[in-house]
Length: 255
Image (tube, rainbow, N blue to C red):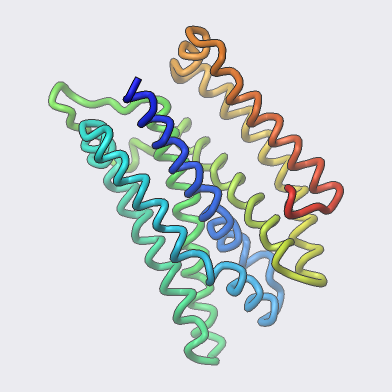
């Protein structure tokens, strides 16, 4: 029972982190494509800057809970996913530095350089978090000593990449909605339209990923053993369609 409570807390902490930092990943990933001039770029940066640093506290907390509640799982997970997690950490650092340094000089080349790093620093975690969690869902092959003998490339398997695409689309929808809330004028309109377009791509990716999960993992066995768990995917589907409803009504905050 205690392990179940800890697992629920662990899942909640990761969910809160993805909700709070997810819009940063989404906005940063969309920034080069949605901001058309310097004023809009400043709006993009200003929508992210006040929040990104505090959001990382949830990431640290989630990692701490993993270590405290499931030390063996922590050891296996972090050693198996070491390359991916190291890249995520590097990207998070790059993103934070880009937000701090971009405005130091007025040079166009200087700003373009940090704009590119901002994109890398947010697209990277969006993709790699999906890859990491998809591999956890599928199961990571380890030996009797709990040692993983694969590499980053072996984590980039088709199912892992599907998870990466799904997470990236989730974050970009989240980011476009956040930008629609925090901006005005043409940028707000583009962000809202983009959220609607990305929603359909997200819906397709979700269906494909669920189908691949049924084929590639044994997660559905848990639902058959405990039918009450079906509430979780049903709630997710309901939330997905609720987002579309609010997007069509231009109620960005509710979406």
